[in-house]
Every structure is written in structure tokens, then in C-alpha cells.
Amino acid sequence: MKRKETIAEPDVVLIGGGIMSATLGALLHELDSSLNIQIVEALAEVAKESSNPWNNAGTGHAALCELNYTKENPDGSVDVSKAIEINEAFEHSRQFWSTLVENGLIKDPADFIQPVPHMSFVRGEADCDFLKRRHQAMSGHHFFERIEHSEDPKKITEWAPLLQAGRKATEPMAATRSTDGSDVNFGSLTESLVRFLDSSDRVKIATHHQVRDIKRSKDGRWELTVRNLEAGINRSIKAPFIFVGAGGAALPLLQKSGIPEGKGFGGFPVSGQFLVCSELEVVEKHNAKVYGKAPVGAPPMSVPHLDTRIINGKRSVLFGPYAGFSPKFLKSGSLFDLPGSVRLSNLKPMLAVGKNHMDLTRYLIQQVRQSPQDRLEALKAFYPEAQLEDWKLVTAGQRVQIIKQDKKKGGVLQFGTELVAAGDGSIAALLGASPGASTAVSTMIEVIERCFPKRMDEWRANLKQLVPSYGANLITDRKAYEQLKARADQLLGFS
Ligand SMILES: Cc1cc2nc3c(=O)[nH]c(=O)nc-3n(C[C@H](O)[C@H](O)[C@H](O)COP(=O)(O)OP(=O)(O)OC[C@H]3O[C@@H](n4cnc5c(N)ncnc54)[C@H](O)[C@@H]3O)c2cc1C
Image (cartoon, rainbow, N blue to C red; front, side, top):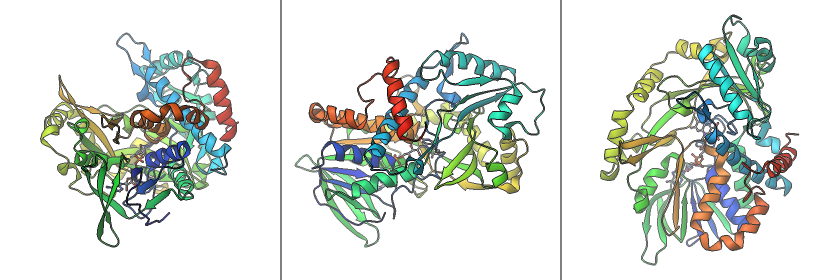
């Protein structure tokens, strides 16, 4: 999708052509089709950074398998509140995607979402005990009551044969499995949303255009300096509302805007690599996303997993991520991104995080120094019979973790996402990348609620049509959840 069109004075500018801007653009266009929307993307095409299917793991994060979403309390009980919150947020995404299918905006849901069971897998007595307690705690909520648990090697083999072949039967192991899980091609979804937007006269898309500066103009609107990277010329775009959906590069753009709400934030980039196997013999034996436990010191998003991927109809198996360090904020970014983001206001939190997270530093150094054999050993913990020659190493996207001011510690590293918006709602930026693309719809609804409060009375009913779970409390209203889940299952090809 290559476009060069710009509008001098749109109502809305979306910086970046990833899943976040595409989702926000589609929602806003559906809520008010008279809005003039400008999308500005630095690369030649949309969905080429984190939202590209090869740059992320494609897990529809519904907290069905990710052990890092449930914390063990000191008394041994398991806190499932975050898992519940994430599952509800993912259901909002499924509801909006179902509407796109229902309205014919996406012809075949299999182009972007496929049912793939989600599993958690652990070994050793302590972890098996944790998984059992976790399963008990989770199955008490209607979101998770269909999750199965087993410590029987035969059952686990039935669920995921690669995990068991060549493994000693004496080793304690346990797994949980949910058939509600999914693999999502966020790149394909982004392209579909942008294609839909592109069909409107009110939406203009400028690829190969990079936002270089954001300033408040005298009339209160935002003035963007946008560089046409092919022609080598700058142009100015003025708009009353801007969404900074620039992925890892959102932080420097937020800093340029100078809004007080953006002060004190820093970014810590973590890069990732995956091993990918396309060998039919391996691919045909695996149909699951299997998440394990993160090694000590590893950031939560570095939980290892052995995943079925379905990209453009082709199945493969992916393992990782192996973390790494690069100062770039985007895969296509610059080595000066991290040093260039240091300001007087974020220096203290950044130094505090450097000092307080030595375990993370050690973990990253260990990861960066890994040899192919070390990577194979990590893979063998999941797939004991793996052969190195069947796997290819690919570089994934960059994740920029949020560094925030903290009164007690000076600064903290945050692994979630944070929506930073100006008090007057004229600009919003999304920092961080977890749970990421899966929760794009609820995060973009939050942008709309915070930045367009005066229009909410008029938009609420329409928003409910677009996202039928909007306004419902799926966490407490079991009946509404079951009805809506059945709707999405049917429209997305899960039932
Ligand atoms: C290794 C890895 C694994 C992940 N796994 C998962 C997963 O399994 N499930 C999940 O839900 N999420 C996952 N995520 C997170 C998910 O990929 C991201 O949260 C999501 O893609 C972010 O979308 P975005 O639109 O904000 O950013 P992006 O997709 O990165 O898009 C930002 C766009 O902005 C453009 N841009 C940047 N600066 C400018 C500028 N100045 N001017 C114009 N354009 C600009 C970029 O070129 C880019 O196209 C993963 C991420 C990574 C890195």
C-alpha cells in the first residue's frame, strides 16, 4: 500500500501505519465519516515495523497461556486479576474484528486470525505445583473455566507431540491447554484496515513521509513538519488532533510536542530474535502456542514459547524470543535513538533503572552472547529432538519498554503500555508494547474517550454497534460474555 497524498489541514493526523493507528483510524472513520484523516508513515509501506507478522509472535494475548500475567502471592495463592483484565481487553478486539467481518470489510477472517490452542508448559516439581494452583485459581472465572490441566505425559503428547518426543518420562511436567487460543497476523489486519480507510475520500495516506517535528501553533492546533523522504522536501500539516502511533519511536515524538504529561518518560529498547522452522515434518506435528516460564532476570515479554504461526496461509513453527540489545527504537531506527532520547527530565529515572535492574542487564548480556548451540539448548527445553539445521534465525521487532519517574525508587521500568495524552485531548501517544497489538481496540477506545470527550454522548451508541462488548462488564456479566463470545467465535471462524 504505497500512497503519497497529504492534506494540509486535516481533522486528525495518525503518525505511523501500524495496527494502532489503523485501528484508531477505522474506529474514528466509522464514528464520523466526515472527519478528514491523514496517515503519515515513514516507511514505503504500512505494517512493516512491529505489526508485521514476522516482527511479532502473533499471539492473540487472551491470558490463556502466558504465565507472566498471573503473579504468585507470598501466601502461595495466585493473583489472576491481570489475566482477567487482558482477556476482557482481547475480547473487545475480537468483537470489533467480528464487526469488520460481519460488515464485509474483511472477507475472510482466516486471512488474519486462526484458532490455535494456547498451552502453558512447565517442568520440575515446584513449577508443576505452581501450574496446578494457577489452574485452580483461573478456572474459578468464566473466562478460563474451559482450560484443561494435565500432568500426564500421554495427554501432553496428545496436545503437543514435539514437547515429549525424546524426553525422560520420569521428569515431572505439567501443562494447561485452551482451545480458545488464536494466532493473529496483525500485519494483514493492519493492511485490511488501511485498505478500508483508503477507500474513503476523507482519508489520505502518505507513505515514505516522516514526521520530523511537532509544535503547537498560535491558533492552538498542532503543526507537524513532515519530510517527503523520496522528494527530499518538507511540508507542514496542521491539525487539531494528533495520535502518535509511531511504535517504538513514539517517545521522541512525544518529547518534541513538549506536553507536560510526556515529561519524565524514558525508553529502554529490547530487541528480539526468533528461530523459525518450515520443515513439514515438524510443522505438521505442532498445533499450539506453548508458553513456558521466563528465566531469572528476563523481562516478562521474553517468556520462551514454541508457536504455531500461520502467515499468508503458510504454517511454520517459531521459537523464542531471544532477547538482545540495540539502542534503536524501531527495527529501521537509528543507533542514536536511545542517547537522543535522554533529557534532563528523564535522566534520573533512566539512571535509577540502570542501577536497579542489574539482573536485566546480566540477562541481556547473556542473551547477546549466545551461540547457535546455546539457542538450540533453549529450544530443546521445549522440543528435545530439535535439529539446528531445520531452524533459521530471524530478527523480530524492537520493543521500547517504558521508564517512568517513581517517587521512592527514582525510576521504574514498566513492561506494559501507557497512553499519554495532553490534558486538552489534542494529542495522545502510545508508549510500550505489551500486551500490544492484541489489545489495540480497547487501547484505541481509551484514546477516543480521553481525547474526544465532548463527542462521546453522540458516539456511544455507534461505538457499541462497532464493538458490541463496549460498555458491558464481561468480567462480572457471564451471560453477556457467553453471548458475545459465541458471536465472535462464529464470525471469526472459531466455531
Ligand atoms: C518481538 C515482539 C513480539 C511481539 N509479540 C506480540 C504478540 O505475540 N502479540 C501481540 O499482541 N503483540 C505482540 N507484540 C507487540 C506488537 O507487535 C505491538 O504492540 C504492535 O505491533 C504495535 O503497533 P504500533 O502500531 O504501535 O507500532 P508499529 O507497528 O511499530 O507501527 C509504528 C509505525 O510508525 C512508523 N513511524 C515511526 N516514526 C515515524 C515518524 N516519525 N513519522 C512517520 N511514521 C513513523 C513506523 O515506520 C511504523 O510503521 C510483539 C512485539 C515484538 C517486538
